[in-house]
Amino acid sequence: MTDKTESLDTIGREQARLLAQVLPFMQRYENKTVVVKYGGHAMGNPALGQAFAQDIALLKQSGVNPIVVHGGGPQIGAMLEKLGIKSEFKNGLRVTDKRTVEVVEMVLAGSINKEIVAMINAEGEWAIGLCGKDGNMVFARKLGSEAPADADVPDLGFVGEPAEVDRTLLDLLARSEMIPVIAPIAPGRDGETYNINADTFAGAIAGALQAVRLIFLTDVPGVLDRDGNLIQELTVNEARDLIADGTISGGMIPKVETCIEALGRGVDGVVILNGKTEHAVLLEIFTEHGAGTLIKPNAARRQRGR
Ligand SMILES: Nc1ncnc2c1ncn2[C@@H]1O[C@H](COP(=O)(O)OP(=O)(O)O)[C@@H](O)[C@H]1O
Ligand SMILES: CC(=O)N[C@@H](CCC(=O)OP(=O)(O)O)C(=O)O
Image (cartoon, rainbow, N blue to C red; front, side, top):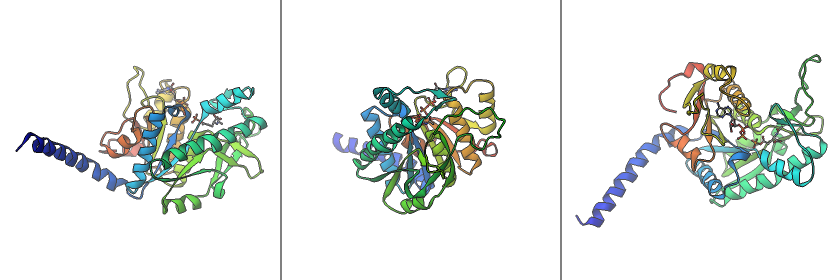
């Protein structure tokens, strides 16, 4: 054999090995729904954005049903600042008055949504930008509106939580070439528009669709232990213990709580990943070990493979 045929042979063997590793995962996820929450902190770098769009396109081409729910907190903050509108957070949620909700809708359902759609479409796919208002997909209720009258719940204005999710439109899109890209904005039955935390919104969509995976793309490798090391797998009880002892704090608390709720609604597994790692989604779905923290129901402890 010449040097050239030898090296082609090596490349061929390597490709065959890779394919053999990936194919079982492709079969496992075929026709299954994977909800990917793309956080505002994970956005902003064009190369990473393109890698994210390629991952979503590849999932669809592999027969998976990917649904993107996006945030955009930092981008909303920048626009509010430009417009001279002050903004504050309480318990990780943006206090949202009438003027603010108009800007939130404009940034989330307008510019960011269309940017993500365009990125995925540049990869040869058919993404479609939506929010909870489209196809009566999600109706919100004002946060705290169901709390007992004597409960001490701060009034955050037009901040909502998903109250009803209708999967008709998403089921239709799952059978089509379209990839839904959804902004966390929804109408209330009172006719108002509500700003919903994107993690909470993604959890509600994943729960309603009984997704096989809910993936959170954030700005850390996953849930970290006290020494800053990545925890690869957590049961619901272990996650609760880490919240109680303060290892999980700040913005990671609502994220992990959403994970726990989504598992309770029948989502198989919830993963928190570093959106700043190129192709984090592909690595998670199509490799044995995944790339971040997988949170599983207590009963599923130590199941082999992710
Ligand atoms: N145990 C922990 N492991 C990882 N991150 C943690 C932990 N406790 C707190 N955090 C914080 O949670 C942040 C992620 O939450 P958040 O900022 O709300 O993300 P996003 O904007 O992507 O939704 C991390 O950047 C980190 O500062
Ligand atoms: C009520 C509330 O806080 N809504 C969020 C919605 C966007 C979001 O959640 O974006 P990230 O995922 O990038 O944080 C906000 O106004 O910032």
